[in-house]
Figure 1 (tube, rainbow over the protein chains, first blue to last red):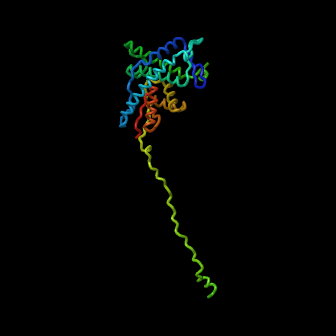
Figure 2: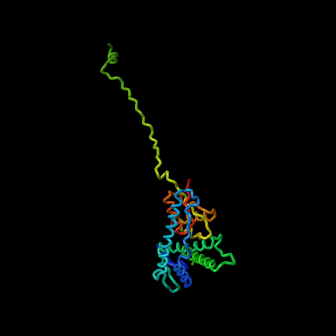
Figure 3: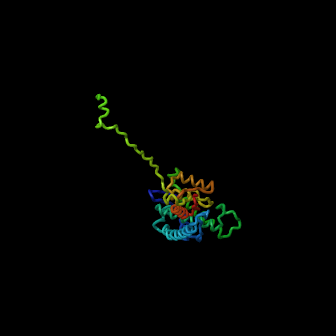
Length: 159
Length: 116
């Protein structure tokens, strides 16, 4: 996957066949993990913390539902078109942010499901098939994130 | 009566006037009364380190949410990475809460902590 064109608020990426299939699978099956409640404060010193935390978790759950709705839109024929070299993914600024949020939801969700390890490398030789799958999903999401944010070859000076 | 004395006792002649004392107003020192906003508690919005969020991603999110330039966003990202956390902004409760929601939507580990 590489950014081939950026025009104003539109980004165009070129994906090969494998990348296209994998990205479609990620978006089609999103979310891969359940909602995990988060804390709004570490101190818990503020009396309103409880209410704020409840609101935050409700809001995050709603936001996730919205991301799920948007996920299928991102892999529609209009956005992901077949080209000579593979596939072209065209996104506006908002769609690019949505895709980034979906990918990072997958990445962080898998990391949490793995028990929040100190490293994202797979070390344990006796990993379960489920953990291996989570590692793969986590790395795959990271791969797409990296390229989604990446600069065009012209911007980086590489040709 | 000499002309000299005549002039002296001339009752029609007014006494030299003495200026009435003028009270100089005290300099006005504005006492700023604290508004509700001043008294309201403020919060630090803090981003905490984790091993999963990509550095390039964290920088991108800071730029997007706070409108920072790349240099400032990278500075905070590096602080998170090297020191375990970075105080991103100090705001009133409502705005701090808004920023935490935004950062959490991107799955960054962000919290709001009382500033005092």
